[in-house]
Amino acid sequence: MSCSKTWRHIWTVTKRELTGYFASPVAYVFIVIFLLMNGFFTFMLGGFFERGEASLTSFFMWHPWLYLFLVPAAGMRLWSEERRLGTMELLLTMPITPWQAIVGKFVACWLFLLLALVLTCPLVFTVMYLGSPDKGAILSGYFGSFLLAGGYLAIASMTSAMTRNQVISFILSVVICFFLILCGWEPVTRLLVNWAPEWLVRAVASFSVMTHYLSMQRGVIDSRDLIYFASLIGFPLFCTGVILRGLRS
Amino acid sequence: MITVNNLVKLFGTKRAVDGVSFTVERGEVLGFLGPNGAGKSTTMRMITGFIPPSAGTVSVGGHDVQEDPIAAKKLIGYLPENAPAYTDMTVFSFLHFAAELRGLRGDEKKNAVNRVVEMCFLGGVLHQSVETLSKGYRHRTCFAQSIIHNPDVLVLDEPTDGLDPNQKHEVRQIIKRMGEKKAIIFSTHILEEVEAACSRAIIIDRGKIVANGTPGDLKAMSEWAGAVSLRVRGASPAVVRAKLSDMGGAKKASADEEGAAVRARVYPSKPGNRDLARAVAELAARENWKVEELHVEEGRLDEVFRNITLPDTVKEAKS
Ligand SMILES: Nc1ncnc2c1ncn2[C@@H]1O[C@H](COP(=O)(O)OP(=O)(O)OP(=O)(O)O)[C@@H](O)[C@H]1O
Ligand SMILES: [Mg+2]
Image 1 (spheres, rainbow over the protein chains, first blue to last red):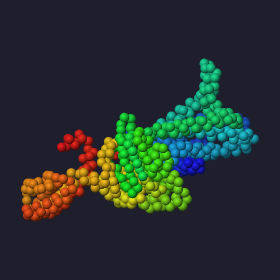
Image 2 (cartoon, helix red, strand yellow):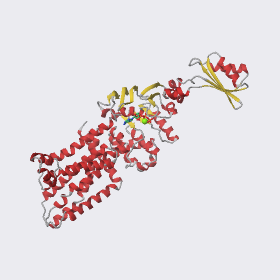
Image 3 (cartoon, chains in turn brown, cyan):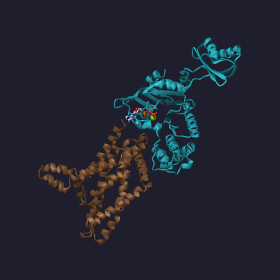
């Protein structure tokens, strides 16, 4: 199968998924909630103005927590809905590979999250107006946030393939993502340090999204972080394929 | 076009499909019959590559469905059971989506969509959301999807389920017409459909093929096949029964009162005895019975179906 054909199939699936989102009010509600929550966290909890610096730190620092609920909410229907409606039988008997379907659906939801993220740009203009922020840090911050959303979403894709019940799928992915935050969150690592050897603490922390996310927030794009996020997206998507295969046999 | 070889599907320890083999050539319409839970849908899912078989092989157009699924799937149009469709799309965008996945582009795609919309009478609901469609229209939409790329092989799981009588007729006509150039398998619980549209029928029960032949062959398996049925006046049922039973070539006869007349049936002692009807007519003339009706029974599929697929315990209890 030629490469362009593969992408065409993926894009067909992606397009369908995206039109599906915007056919119902859910997409708009999601975006509004996303923006409101972002505003709330940035200004009320993050102390955007009190910091007295022209940066988006108070905006980005909450994303791992914000995404913890919003991304599983966006991704919980990816495959469970497909199973519930029986359209999975239709999709997987089309002349496309399961990978094309999995990636296509994932990309659609990711693009949707990207759109929500892009709509926070007034914040960028605000900071630029107030001072002269480090533009590189803002860009790499957005990039990291986008990758983080992708990682959570891949997990949501996996859990949604496990069950036709969206609620269960949501809870499962929240739990997994929560674990990925906790294992590198400072209060937790501090607890670990007391009794675990140094290398173990570091190994556990390196599994955490926090470690990699925070380093990108500082404006550093390290290849290790990129590899981490690539595998955070790739592995659950691979598992999605395995689960879907298992379901059918 | 379709070769199914010793197909087995296990769900846990349950053998849902148990050693099924058959072939369907281009120009054939194969009717797939069987009681609920016989394994019809499971077999079709394996043919279309949705679920892998536990053992055995399926090849479609020379492509093994397991080894080269994409090539096989390209040839197949599939209407799954219960006609699933994306509820968040309109009929129009759903059909476009299906056409695109089938590799149709531009004008080709437009023409294909127009063709199936016309064939399945979807013009009136084209821009309605699938969610709000009535069951029959949803079924038609999914059927339209299955023929959008004019496939060589069609696998239809209960294509007329939920359709009104006119639409049932229409879909049967479509199947019959397309069957001249394609290989078609469809499952159904409506036996007249088999006679109306199939060139061959398979009855499957508890995962195994129990009958395979043309609708005529199957009907001939009926104990009614070749029996002569008549309605006469001018004699009592007992006399009619006695006279008919004593006839040469008759195995047994029955006769009962039907209003003022007698309804009788003679079963031939060997199948395909074409002389029986003539003998009955001559007998009636000799006995001065007034014949109101006389015809040779063709055998009935529903009776054959019941005889083959009723569990033995039920059969014994009945007899
Ligand atoms: N995914 C599955 N897991 C376990 N058992 C299954 C599964 N799918 C089907 N079966 C079982 O396999 C058997 C055959 O089912 P199938 O759907 O093929 O029947 P069918 O002939 O299509 O029946 P119907 O006329 O009701 O549509 C049934 O006993 C069913 O319970
Ligand atoms: Mg079925």
